[in-house]
Length: 74
Image: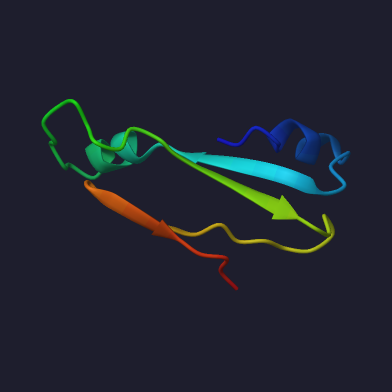
């Protein structure tokens, strides 16, 4: 989920800081990865700046049970 989703849905988002929350623990469980609790990464928050809300943005996340990386995307 993302905390700027409501503004995007209303069409009122014009730019600024936005966020995505990747539920990595739930994703690994959904893939059949039975990880012993507590999970090191439950949720990975990604905060980024949107300069032009009319453009298309990607927020890719590469994750493993013990770490993650993110980049701007294309």
